[in-house]
Length: 259
Ligand SMILES: [Mg+2]
Image 1 (cartoon, rainbow, N blue to C red):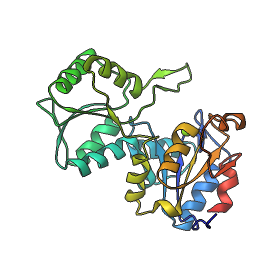
Image 2 (tube, rainbow, N blue to C red; image 1 turned 120 degrees about the vertical axis):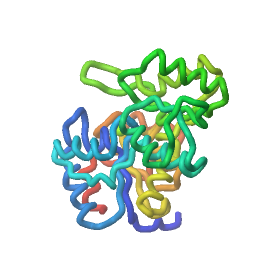
Image 3 (tube, helix red, strand yellow; image 1 turned 90 degrees about the horizontal axis):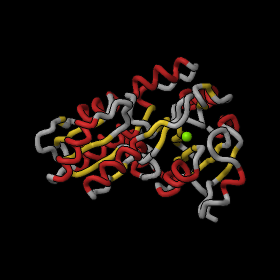
Image 4 (tube, rainbow, N blue to C red; image 1 turned 180 degrees about the horizontal axis):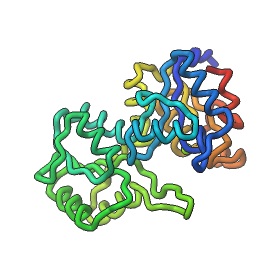
């Protein structure tokens, strides 16, 4: 097998890798510190489109993970970047929170419900029947349907929460139109992120706790992939997939010396 290039830049998933149920994973702080000290390009990724990078920076800081705002990449940022490339200066009807509306504004989009180019669906905790009805009618009238991430549920201490994928399914049922999902496992989430930090896939690695999103997206984007066992995946699960990560490690602590 040809020798891989040295890893120059790192992308890492957030939940299940750096933190788990609100608690930092041992070694995560050392890993982030090493990356910052090294000056290497890096990104912390999340499929959740609800929060801005600034919100997430503060949340991470609260558990002693000091990730600069510019090193945080959300599916909302990837969506805004994608739309800016596809259709610069367009219009969109957005269902989502500050993470998404801020990213869309910063990409130069006008948010409107008057004949928009796109309907963009993201994560929110306050889905309204009125907003969903409007989205459905706009899609019926020709607006193209984009969703930030395909996750059907999200975690909470009380149990599962319906997430963007579930609400997208409702709109799909009503319109007959499938959305284009931007977040993981779409490798677009990786590609837009790599572009944002000026990194190249062949010298980059992706760290994640899920085979079906993190490892798959990293693999399809042409990156090295590391699976950690501190999140949703255990060793016996790996063989259920027709693809493998480059390497399986117990936790992020095992990767500190690789930076
Ligand atoms: Mg995860």
